[in-house]
Picture 1 (tube, rainbow, N blue to C red):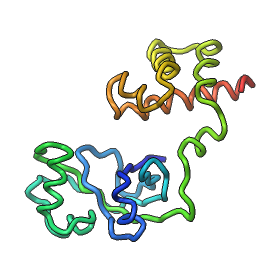
Picture 2 (spheres, one colour):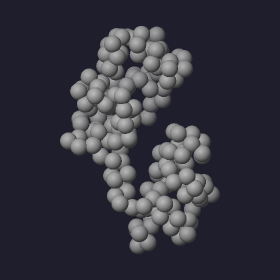
Picture 3 (cartoon, rainbow, N blue to C red):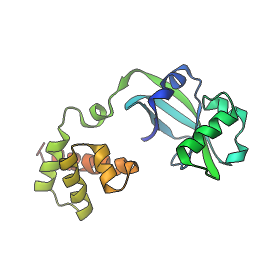
Picture 4 (cartoon, helix red, strand yellow):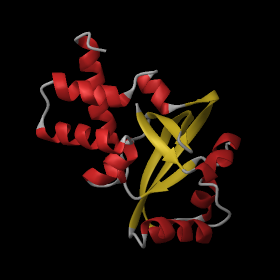
Length: 179
């Protein structure tokens, strides 16, 4: 399942139902998708994507701003510019949010009590890996952090790649009975 990530400051707006949209520079979801919603490093619920619209920045109106948890379009546009600079176009993603009864630690959800350093070391020793996968695992062993590894291999947005490599290795090591 895909993920929508939010800063901690949006937790109360999400949980209260006042935040029903988000504005992003890039969009990887489509109408009908169900996604995990992260806030402050925890998965706090799921959302069904209702609508995705590409808009010019000057097309942002007060309705979009209110759905995104802002008081006015000016406040939202200032926030967009603070985060993204001065983009010409953005994506407005509208969603229906369903909170979980208790938040979930993503590490617990994907890896249980598995030590990811152990996964990386065993994968390097036992699996046939591409050069890129080896680089990611070696960097992960040095940094001991998905986030720091992503930054070193090309930027914070590479976290998904690091996670996919670790999960793939974990699954293969489990299949082989090595973990």
